[in-house]
Image (tube, rainbow, N blue to C red; front, side, top):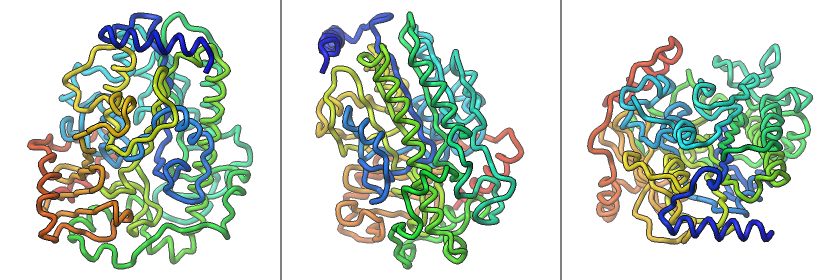
Length: 476
């Protein structure tokens, strides 16, 4: 480690010991990295044996990997709203794709993460997807979405599913056409500049979100005839309630597993996801390289996250919108000056823990109204006592509680699921009917919310239809 880094790290700990009162330019910069729809198919998380993510893996080596981290909702908008405000969906009423957090009465007067940092002297910049739209209003500088989920071919490549985003395959020919590469160049340029203030730089990558497009070079890393498919047990859902099955089986949102198999597209879709992940990892690597070559290398906190998990056939499901492990598990990696590198914790972590963690790491005063926990204690002692489970909701009354060993799910109709991840990592055996597990169930059920907001109405026509479809299933 360079001597400048050692000096800065010692100073950092001294200031934290004096009550965390870092001031002005003394505060560290923040590089906030988001990868849309990235599940645990990451090398360091071991979610798929063929995942190739060398840059995410090297980031994990320089910080703390939270290997048991989970989203607060398996849907983009509520997950990101929760992360950026430090509030659970059941506290805000934002459960689905709309409304935006700016239209939630419970969040009136609440500053988002970038707004809070800006109010405390940070220069805030972002490019790509950090919020679920309207990123420009939350950052002082915004580099645009650069085409968002595009570009797209004139006709779909893989299958005729009705949703316009559901497609996968080799496209385009040149990485430079991809929004994520354009965002990468913008971020690299920003990191090469000097700033009089500490800065927050957010970089939101769109891949591997559908459409799962990437150029041929990334598909070549994952030959289709060698693809390993996720493990599926055909009678997996036989011990679930009909309500649980119906809640997660919506053909109008994503293709049904039966169709993907019958169309001969399962291997192709898995290949496309792996290729898209490798491309996103490549873009992230360029940003990390730029940081390391910049004058900000020794005083920048790096946070990597995804907004929720993603099914590619597991439990006979596709996409997100489930309360199972594949729908909620996400990568969280935090690297900060003065903290040990190459460490991992299996204690439960939540996306809404990122906000309070950054407040502590930057020496800013904690906001006691936030509902997450600072993860700094686990960055100091990865196996520290940690009584906080991860809580995920999908509409009112539907909750998952994830502890170090168990996943407990309770649905609005009263049905339950319990899985022991030490012996059942695929969540194939529902233990909720086993009387010997009653104490475990009670311990997890004690973390369920005692009150919850109703679903807020959406403002856009398309989102209204989606909200209505989901909200109808939140009623027993």
